[in-house]
Image 1 (tube, rainbow, N blue to C red):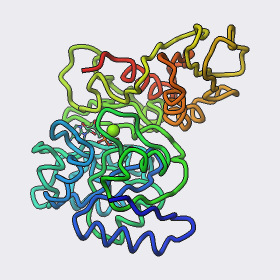
Image 2 (image 1 turned 90 degrees about the vertical axis):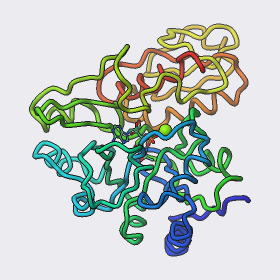
Image 3 (image 1 turned 180 degrees about the vertical axis):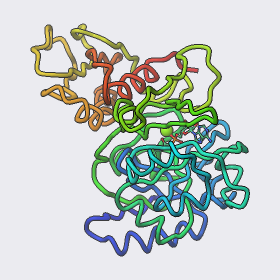
Length: 326
Ligand code: TXA
Ligand code: MG
């Protein structure tokens, strides 16, 4: 099988019809979202969700995010506390996932929630929302990549990785945000926890909440969001972080306007954002890592990235890419 590729810009009707046909046949599709490309299937259908795991080669059943058309659909499946409601109003549609109590009559399958009594809910921007609205049911969608690999931000990334395993890839161009959604959970006692930094900066969420987010402890904490497992986003090359300059033969990812010492030593060179814009760096991160990896360099060295705003998500993904491999 080689996936059909349809442009949602050039042929939106054909793309939507093809997507609905695949989803109704319990076949996962690759679709663009504003964060990364997702591998989407009916969140209420165990056969469809099982296919997602098979295609990704995901070693175990981690909970998947249930993507909704809007807040109205989300309310059918999950219970909202006032703080989660406030965040939904502020950031949906957009790159925020809320972990919420699952309603008993939701119909979202255990394979999507991994048997938890909570569900990760997000309302994506753009064409993905149109597909969900037309389908009428939530879509479970992890990133559309082989488990453990770098998440895809273009249709070409998806086709290279999964093109022989799925039947349809919808092309919506480069994903604008470039890192996955921020995952937040409001606890019963009112504490709000940041389970995964992502496409919405923690500071923006804190501004809406009027209180600080609690960070998951970096080491030793129970794994609540398995996206927080150590090795993830792993390129073939090794990673060297906070590298002020390249060593001979390394691929080097710079950040910001400063001149790079020993730039000529790098076998591959790119700048994530010459102007030092963290949103631009996030949007280019995964594509740059893939290009650096393809250069054949044994090590990808990355300049220090400020740890505020979207820099927190960038540094999270980089440290997972650098983590020891299983
Ligand atoms: O931007 C995104 O979120 C992308 C696009 C495709 O929407 N999706 C994505 O999915 O990143 P995935 O499967 O790669 O990551 C989902 C994360 C995992 O870390 C999972 O553990 C967490 O969400 N998660 C899902 N449901 C959860 C729950 N009930 N409790 C805690 N964590 C949950
Ligand atoms: Mg992923």
